[in-house]
Image 1 (cartoon, helix red, strand yellow):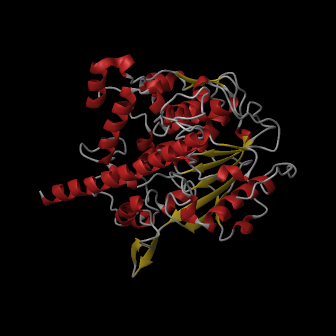
Image 2: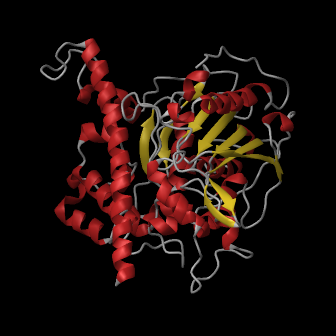
Image 3: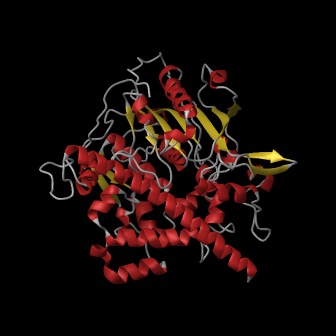
Length: 472
């Protein structure tokens, strides 16, 4: 009984902290949009502006993403140098969502040719990879006939009348920078390109010039088990946990289907058609009971982020010989008398501190089979509050990919393709996103290093022309 009560207390604390942080992000975006609207109109709430975006929260939200939903591409890149595509992680958002808020805290302004796609924030890595392809190339998102049938959702999704980089091919490749789950999304997309998995497109692995993984979920995380995934299989959820609260909230949000609100932020499950307009009240009951929807079929991102789920994904993914790889693994832990503990109290975001401490003490249940051969709890103690540091270095399970540890970025110049160069840096999981002030000068050093590597050190034939850069 005492253990059950303690679990409920921990659940209450975790839920409260996450809700407060979510409210902080949402209110920050709203406040910025209201300020922008007020600057353009003296009475943004008393009258509807004559043109979209001239004032009012509804118009800011709609103007930011309606074009994307219709398939229009406000920014279309052509030719060279290759664009740098920033791919967000779980609960993330791209350009146009949450008004003018930037998931990458404005890092996209450091180069003239940067794209920030908006993908499903909780959809599976497979579905996000499909969305990413059509965001760049153009056309209607095709999730694949077999996958769609197995997981019970519509085969086709959003339409991009014009892609953001329609010339994308072997001669016009791209650089990807993926944060958290975004790194694994790019790896899955890369394999799909190599497997020519997009009908009507003659793709290959050489469409991707480089991949930079920033706190990337390359091998899963033990945090998923604290949040509610079962360590026994990495697919199911406990009946009472943080993820169950998340599941209920997402279902209700999508069922209500409030257009302006979903334009402002979208979990990405439109292809599951959970709106009340489609399923009615009885459909809501089925969704909540777990009879239908993404949480019933398992076609959402958390199963992909367990160690078992990552092993299943990684068993199909390769590291390609003509692509450059660099990985930044973050950590907020250290060894003290042989025990792994948080390395800082004030340096860890309040939303992550409890999880940093818990992940330090993670022990795989003795009654559950080990997630992979050679698994050891002590290898997974170091973490950044969301991912284990070992997971962020390079693909390790089920087999280790070619890799090289570097202390300084310059140690790997010239870059060698086909090898994961990895570096371990101090920071929690969200230090380099959303709020650049937290990272201070480290923010500029990190992103300047990433962008400089893409522009000056990652090329196959000859150094490309470097575009104008804006100092931030």
